Image (cartoon, rainbow, N blue to C red; front, side):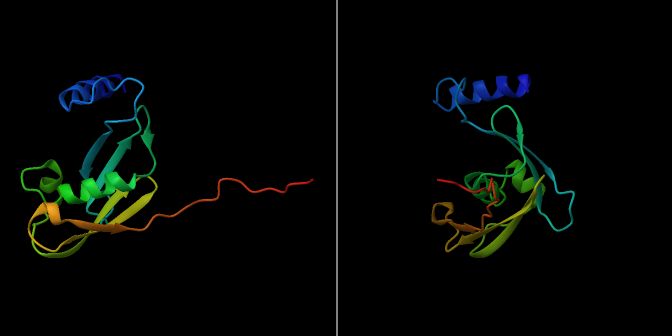
Length: 130
């Protein structure tokens, strides 16, 4: 993680965000071809010093949109073509597959629309006595 933190620090300065020390942004993710045949791409998302089991919704949209941008690593792994229409990008994480629907009303990336479903898990339950 030390090497990733050095990269994150350099990236933060290049993006004009200042030092990344003590901050959760920018995030780092490692992508690869999906292992599961039901997914399009595999990702490990770091927050910032550990590999997260899931994927932030904002990261899911970024990964999905990046899959349609020629010349990106995501596009090389996923080979999506930017055209008008709705497309589902299936992102494999350690906790399962995240489905992100990307809609292009036009071929301008600024017109991008997206949707996904998040699930919640029970964190605790109990009884209160007064």
